Image (cartoon, rainbow, N blue to C red; front, side, top):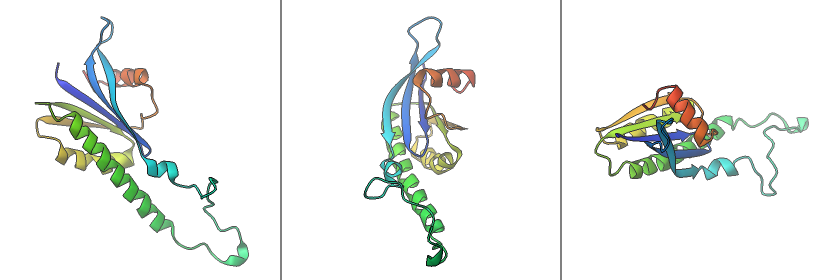
Length: 156
């Protein structure tokens, strides 16, 4: 069987699987989870020191308009997502280090897919093919993920 990996990610976590032949005759494949990564920045974001969610708006009308920090906040979130993508790509490289050739299937929400795609393409060896799907399947169980991957013919 050809080496096949599956990377399923969203902003808060990423899961790396390898595909192995199924033990039972009815199933064609089985996903084995190798690595689960959690983006600590998204867990901590939006919390004040006391553990309450910070307000996004200025509710005091006498204090004037809200400061235009929305753009800065978005750049900050983007930088955290880039760092998380770099960490995920490092783990994907470790997973594929001993592969002669194979396929890595990247399934991520569209925004994260755009951040991770080029970084993963340049990092993987040319013998390892990269396939992509812009969906957020990170919340699915392993069994549900197996069903979706086979149903959409991402892994044969």
